[in-house]
Length: 227
Ligand SMILES: *[C@@H]1O[C@H](CO)[C@@H](O)[C@H](O)[C@H]1NC(C)=O
Ligand SMILES: *[C@@H]1O[C@H](CO)[C@@H](O)[C@H](O)[C@H]1NC(C)=O
Image (cartoon, rainbow, N blue to C red; front, side, top):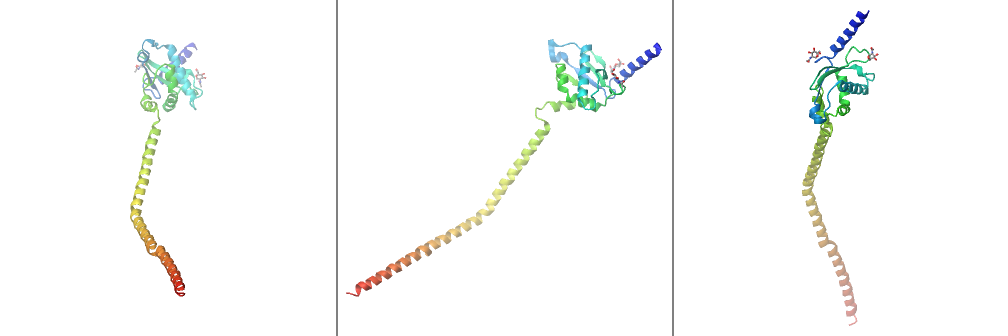
């Protein structure tokens, strides 16, 4: 009975270490550079720090939609080295025997990267998830999201293009309209000058002259008749 229990517990621990081993399916390697980051204030990596790491990963998993039941004991660490690096896997809380798919763990780590970093007083360069950091680094570094930069640049290009099109269109229209407009203006001016010169002023002058002449002539005639 006792022997069977011992065998069972040995099998369980073997199974667990089997789940967490370097390059295992769904396993992640973590490297910490505590001395580089903190210098004289560096803390030593011990079992308590390991517990904190497990707890923080469990916290990150719980915050993701499908892994709300994750326990601290579902996070397994293995091959911890002194200069601190280790591997970890997250076991499925519903079975405790299979590991959570890599993509799910990766998404949870990415979403909670700041919380994990701040728990250990480290940053992306001194707390590295080797399988994640390569794709994570460009996501975190620019203060403006890359899609916004791309959107802004293309928007500006389109706006500049539209403005240039409008300006060139206006220029073309002006060039096309300038010559006929000018000739029309000239013709209009010619007509008005002609009417001014030969029309109304001349007519009025003629009329006035005729009236004056007529009256004068009549007056003269009247004045002349008595004489
Ligand atoms: C990881 O740890 C296991 C068990 O402690 C050991 O057998 C294995 O050689 C280690 N692997 C590496 C890459 O250090
Ligand atoms: C998994 O392990 C946790 C903690 O050891 C335990 O509370 C839980 O009941 C286990 N789940 C299964 C399905 O064995």
